[in-house]
Image (spheres, helix red, strand yellow):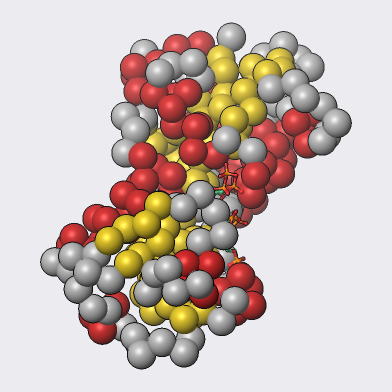
Length: 215
Ligand SMILES: Nc1ncnc2c1ncn2[C@@H]1O[C@H](COP(=O)(O)OP(=O)(O)OP(=O)(O)O)[C@@H](O)[C@H]1O
Ligand SMILES: O=P(O)(O)OC[C@H]1O[C@H](OP(=O)(O)OP(=O)(O)O)[C@H](O)[C@@H]1O
């Protein structure tokens, strides 16, 4: 039986809806009183694992799940050895550099060398500033990244922006977009190449349904 890694958090609801549209019902994962992390859909077709978003590519790379749904930002950050089968189109956000509205930095090139940048996505942040040949100190955080500049711990942040509400309500402004992100369907490369248990069929179904729904 094929296994799909399903991300908790921001992408959960739309992931469950997409799977439901192709006949796979994992809606029990939406019930907060349910603590089961692994369920088989009622038709006995596929197993679902409920994992943290950053862990989706890990389960897929190690082959515990042959399929997974995850944000492109996570794929950029983790560089896991997984096959990117399709851009599913939902879960839009962007990875951006932001600073305090009141700061003198209107552009990333205004940031001083050796300044501090707080981020949950340390590899994306490091890569970007390295590309500019601007030496910065990356401060790794697990959340509430906007507090970096607010508390003067850092001059800037690299973080996901979706509606922009969090930046606005915390007096920060975006000065550079690094890349856009949406949810991707990923697969274990060898399983995909060998079309194990008809992975290709599910790829076609999921990609087609996502295209009709989100494009
Ligand atoms: N507004 C948003 N903010 C953050 N992530 C978003 C947003 N919209 C879509 N996403 C997608 O959802 C994923 C984050 O999901 P989640 O809500 O679980 O966040 P997280 O805080 O990074 O997770 P965790 O709680 O495991 O640390 C991102 O990788 C991104 O692809
Ligand atoms: O532009 P917006 O729509 O306001 O969304 C962006 C916010 O959402 C994410 O945080 P999340 O909710 O995952 O919480 P976190 O601070 O714990 O990472 C992200 O890190 C921003 O803080």
